[in-house]
Each structure stands twice: as structure tokens, then as C-alpha cells.
Length: 167
Image 1 (cartoon, rainbow, N blue to C red):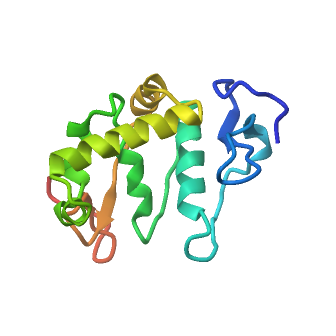
Image 2: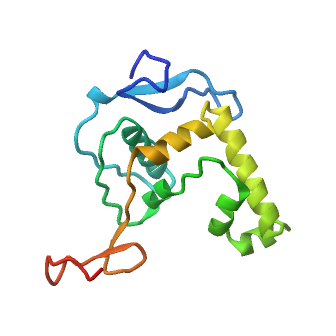
Image 3: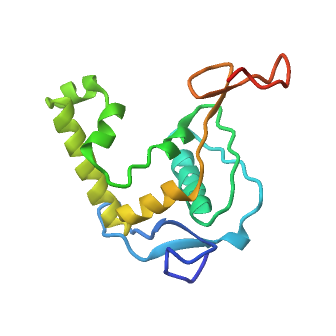
């Protein structure tokens, strides 16, 4: 771990803040020196152990530092990297929210989107993250999802031939 505290320092990966309990205010930033990381990684653990959160965080930090990544994610959770909304507007969240979930919360979809935007804005601010950092992340890398055998993302054919699929 780094002794630095500037989350924007190049080659220092911000992974969160030190906390004593879930109710406590976040403490100082926790940073990893990029030089301490390997060039390849596998993240395994039990369901709910934080693998996706850790992976997304490290990949975001790598992108911000201009470090390219190729990610193989059989479950598809890391596609959340594409859900970066620099302005954190309710309209940005709305297409990704469930009408059924809004109804369960006794909210319209628009009200639910407003609530989610506010929750994210406040939560990110509590951890020292602002909209300018989200905008920098969005601009820092090209994000593509390749989906072998599916057209849900950019289709790719790997089983029958190595020829690219038709455009």
C-alpha cells in the first residue's frame, strides 16, 4: 500500500478509504502503487465477497492511468464499467432501472431515477469522487463488450473460424 493520499497521483490506484465500521465516516484514501501490481490477475471468491467491486475499481484506476486492460468476464458483471454517467442525471439512470423495482418502492420510474441519481451523487461525494473524475474515466478509454455467440454486445465468432463476423 502507498503512503500517498492524493487519489489523482499517476500510478497510484485508489481502492477506497479506510473505515472502522459501516456507519463510520470514511478515513484517509487507500492507494496501491501500480508498480506493486502484476500484469495479469485472477479474482476469485465467494458470492458477495466483493470481487466485482474490486475488479471494477482496479479497472477504472487502470483506465485513468492509461493502462489498457483486456477482461474476460464469464458472468458479465464487469459490463458495469460502461455505466459511467459524468453528469449523474436521472435521465442517465432511467433506461437501466427496473419499472418493477420502482413499483415495489411505490415510486414512478422517473422518481426512482431521481432517487438513484441523488444516491449516487451523494455516495460518490462522501468518498471523495466527483463528476469530473467520472468524465475523465469516460474519456480515458474505449470500452467495448465482445459477446461470443451473442449479439448483445459486439459479436465475435471464435468456435467455427477465426474470421470476423459480418459488420
